[in-house]
Amino acid sequence: LQILVAIQGALTVIGNITMCIAAYRIYKGSQESTNSDSP
Image (cartoon, rainbow, N blue to C red):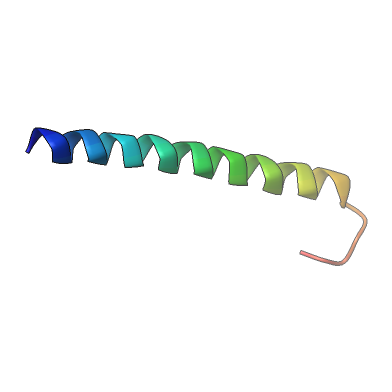
């Protein structure tokens, strides 16, 4: 079970980093294209 705990922790960290990168890219995109009609 220790291996499963380690894998779960690693996947959680990877998921959090991915979400941070995605949120940052969405934020930057919305900041650069404030006068465009594309969502």
